[in-house]
Image (cartoon, rainbow, N blue to C red; front, side, top):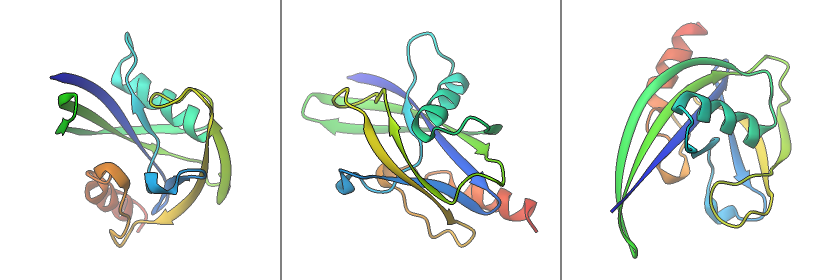
Length: 150
């Protein structure tokens, strides 16, 4: 059995959340910035690092820690336990509506840069579905953002 510690970064602008697709790998599904906590990092620092590395955005505000989720997966190499730490960031209003960005240091897979296509989607109607169950805290986040933006 192996354990993995991950972070998930929900980046919002009003009632919109930042999502991306892998340009060369559409089968990966729609995602939000996420990644592995490196040795010596706190989950909070890892969330900030992953958000900056994957989006290219440097003016994000860390709003809050949303909670944790533990997932157990059965894989060919055995049971894998993944602990996910979810964080909420806010982006400035002048952040572009869409852009492309290369992640230069992917935490999984080959070390080659990965091209992401970013865009904002309104999640006030709970209609955002993310790959890999990354949408676990979307309902909580949606309620907070909708209440704040009324």
